[in-house]
Image (cartoon, rainbow, N blue to C red):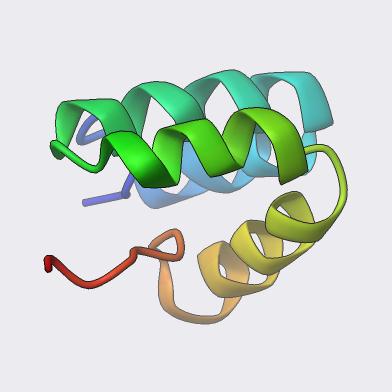
Length: 70
């Protein structure tokens, strides 16, 4: 199981490689998890910083970077 909406890992990696789909899917995935602050951070910092972190983590362990619940 992949991290983007329960999609297959290969599909999730492809979505993570493409910057615009990674940005949109990352915002939606974080908002669905109830991490509104993380979704807002993704909106403003997601083009390069979070995109690169998500891409590396998706390839290495199959899931995007998640903030801890506080």
